[in-house]
Image (cartoon, rainbow, N blue to C red; front, side, top):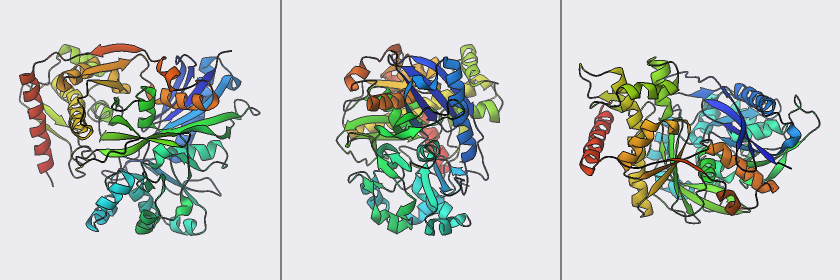
Length: 498
């Protein structure tokens, strides 16, 4: 009898539900976008209740599309936008404030204050992270300090915190499960990744009560059972994996051995390298993080984060109205696939690895009277590749390895222009799998492992299939000059401060 696993992929701009079979074939998918809320410049928020509605909606749709019943589903896995922070009243289930998204900068002052007090080194040693509003800690503190009644609810033991996985697990289980996994906990800046537990010293420094935090579990295990009563009021499905989206992608790309690396081109761009049981600390702006925890055993990863990737293409579509659909982008590039000396630094919410400059803002350089719309589109696509090169340069230094190939996934990886330019600028083989939904696939693999759909990682590795390989087509001098121009553009951007 065929076995199926359902992955819920709750991302930054949309929620998806995807069903895979035992051969890793994608059987059906459903996607719903939701509102991006920008109350002030640099603030990014989501409506937690709207996210829940999209989850119910995509699960219902994907079951209908697949022609399966819920009883055909062996397990559910959740993967999620990671650091995004939501807090809710456990008696009502209602959020006390919007979810504050990982991209949001409203808690910058809290981070600046912690850095001024000299906590950067202590926090990095314990959590593997740099003090930055990207992570959950300052978002939690901002809600406690700024949302009326939030701290009072915490004092009454009624307030719960979670990254989005935790919020979904709580609601799907009707309040029975207040849990997360080690991969998501490691992104909060409250979790000691060496000791694998919430860090009491950090909690005391920032004044966050431990009572609001979820229980941390394995990335792959049966946590409990969930019902979708509108579809089948009697059937319960095992909830069997919770994993942060980038770690899910690393698993979905079968990067199981030390030094294997993947890059996801989504809203942001995230490059992860598996370091197995080695916790590697970075001096060049990389993050040390937990990849996953299976059967109580933690594996680590090095990560580089680019804040703006696919969202720059969305900006061309929605902000500048250059085209109606993101997929039209490549059509324009087929007419004139040259940036013509234009460089675009998409620092809409600052710059991530290796700069970690929260004050930088986006800029376009090299405009002339001859600059066309196509040139700006090409510069936007190239910026994604340049930012990935910035990350890979420091990753090779830190890990002391020459990276020979890069596994790619995410929505923008379907763009051949981007993938070819990435191969050119990295001088590295780019491997694009047949299934680009590796984030959802990773969550499905981890859930399937917990219930016996797949036996082990070796069996999973045999499922992997490659769609296309891109190799370098430019010489060293051209590559050097292109990248030199990018570095000059980044420096100019960082010097422009109002």
